Length: 167
Image (cartoon, rainbow, N blue to C red; front, top):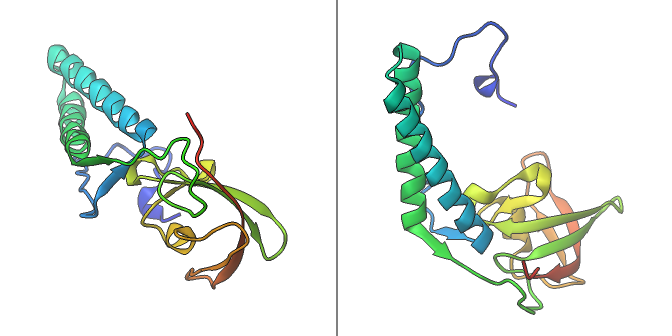
């Protein structure tokens, strides 16, 4: 991980709020992703209102500005959201919203979900539809071998199964 994103013990909070910017790609979301964005917006709006009511010191002012910037970003993401609801679908190939089980060259099985940018969570196996791994998987079917192009070297994956959970 880049040291730019690690807070060392004893360091203070940043002096300026951090502004998130949309990637410029279409904001495809799953139904769960859209719900999560809406919950995030509601939570940020509540937090902003609490901070306005507190009228605190400079640190609170910074926290308020950060909440406002985050709220603007997430409200924009909800407005830009393009719902792709493939829940329960029976497509044989990997599309947005799919759960894909793959076997790596060493035999390790991994399970990935193809989701929107704000839904991505690598440790949970949820990958951004625009990522190199998703690019390798999209359009493939069970039994296909795909090449995941990585900076550390290409990896060949065998697609074991493709499914579209119904939840």
